[in-house]
Amino acid sequence: MQMKSIALFLAALFVLFFAPALRAANIIATGSGNWSSTVPDAPWPNGMVPGSNDAVDVESPFTVVVDTNVAIQYIYGSGTVKMGTNTTLLVLDTAGAYGTVGLGTLDASAPGNTVIYAGNPFWAKHQNYYNLMFSNTIVTNQISFWNGTVNSQDPAAAMTIAGNMTVVGKIKVQEGDDFTILGDLFLGTNSVWDCSSFNLTVAGHTTVEGQMEDLDGANGADVFNDMTIQSSGIWNLLDSTNYFVYGNLTNYGRLIGIAYASINFNGIGVITGNPITLPTLTFNGTNIIGTTITLFTNTPSLNGTLVFDIARTNQMILMSYPPANILTLDYGGALVVTNTGPAPMSGSTYQLFNASSFGGGFNSLTLPPLPPGLSWADNLYADGSISVTGTVILPPAITSLQYDPITRQFTLTWTSMPGALYSIQETSGLEALSWTTLASNIPSGGNSTTYTVTMPAGTAGFLRVYQQ
Image 1 (cartoon, rainbow, N blue to C red):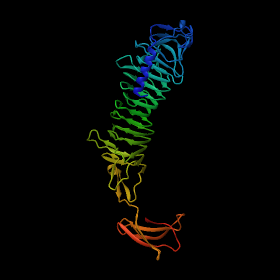
Image 2 (cartoon, one colour; image 1 turned 30 degrees about the horizontal axis):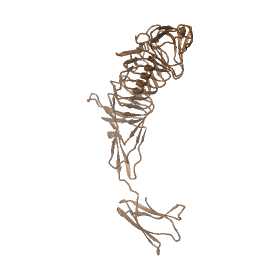
Image 3 (cartoon, rainbow, N blue to C red; image 1 turned 90 degrees about the horizontal axis):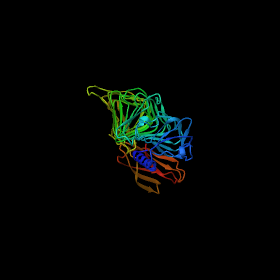
Image 4 (cartoon, rainbow, N blue to C red; image 1 turned 90 degrees about the vertical axis):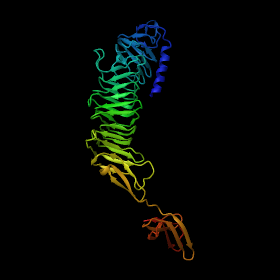
């Protein structure tokens, strides 16, 4: 969900939830039942359904089922609140000190349900959710959600989000335990996600408008599928080597890192967007290089397949830092070069890699086809480039044809290449095009060649000229 859609969604929820809020009270459930029920004591006293200004106390053994979209200040008690399918619970918590942390059980496993913490997310229960949103539409300063141990009532928990996770507003999510998101992760403009020390896994698409960071090196493992860094976004790898991308990386913002900061590309994807500058990268999968990548301090590990398109000017650059250091780019894995543009011309050079020197070797090298007469020159060990040599061989085109019915001779003139040899062939009929050679090893006459052949008696067919 993009930022504009999220803003509209939240606005609609606030209009819907705040409209009937005419009171403020502490509502104590006196039985079990659906949240929207007006039946006395099933679950609310006198059937008085809580509103957006109210707090709710649900004590054991009661269970209240959220069967519609609900807004509430906060929920506490030893009982259970259970989310219904495709319902939304908006926890406003304008005081910023309660949330749901004081509730015995919040069952948010129903398909499609969403729990939104609009106040201080610090007081969100550490547990599994289906869809989870931190929006911070109440507090003006940045506040944190830490899924580590707060107290005995709210211990650290490895959290699994079955659907999507959305963080918007001035919020910092700091992992105190593992996070697994089976849908998409959206990190808004003013938000920060700190992956330090623990594991973050996002199975869907990750969108970063704020900042993604890891502050403690190689502890934990942070795994993404497709990832987009928007123009306002920053991916601060710092000194971490624990990032893995299995799909596409699109960078419209900034990637920054020091020392050994790296991304491990382990799947199949495209690296595109703004140029990337990092200490190093590891390639274990198949990656299309759709932007220029500059690496310093450490050489990359090229174990997978790198794909370059010569219709673009992207390249991988290895530069020394500080400049006095000389770095060698060691080739490895497979190199595939494609061409989605015009056919290359003789003399064209394509710079794929740029470094002080080159070593290692590719297990395989695949280059795009060239027009007849041209060939590839492999300069990868000399200067990191490939180039095109030779002269294009143009197919002959018949420019003149004369026939003498008495001698049954055809005189043909065609465009030719100097130094080439040609043959003339004919078919024995007008339907089955089975070619028979009438003349071969005809020397070129320069740019134009003329030759006379005699057609066999009784034949009717076609003639053609081809270069041997």
